[in-house]
Image: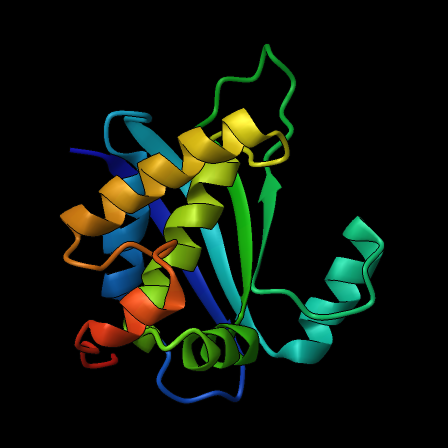
Length: 164
């Protein structure tokens, strides 16, 4: 059992956002076997806030689906603080539509993906991307979601699950 302190902040006007319980389930799946205890915040935002943060921290003047801000604690401080995720609701909804994915499946992917970033996983190098994508695919399959990296025609052929 993971001791998870999760705060969900909703700063978005979008509808059809996942419940706190769903977000907890997705974070817990990503943490399982990797962390016994964690404290993190998931902030759901609109495009303006995402654009501002993406510009400030990544130098990109556009909103993005998920930003991960790992906690940067000194090594002698032993706290379960993992960090923060900022997820842009309109970008997630637009990507789900464009990629012919169920909205709930894409939300699950973004939460799992961001949580793995907080744990230190990355996809800058091809080898690291392969490891991270395989892990994401397995975690999402365990949650009942299809492969998020399947070609669009394969994803489109799969039945769409109901959204939250």
